[in-house]
Length: 85
Image 1 (tube, rainbow, N blue to C red):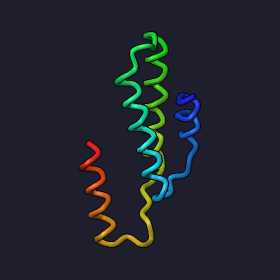
Image 2: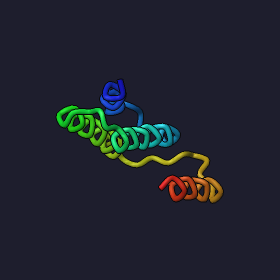
Image 3: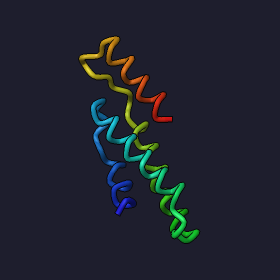
Image 4: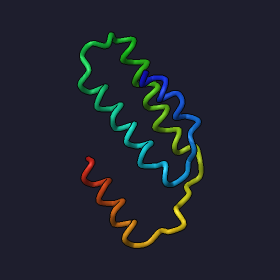
């Protein structure tokens, strides 16, 4: 089911407010890939390919920024990126 989600993520909006959902799903997929031991080699390769294609699909569009970008929003976004990794 997650492979279908990854394939659909190639066609999602590049709106700035969709960024968090997009990267949260990518992070979830990476964690599934990391801790899953029941996938065969071929299935794992397909899952990884779909996941990376979905992650890189975000960069197919030119960057857009939210209209209400303030210093507080920038600080919050940076904190989210730092604490997730």
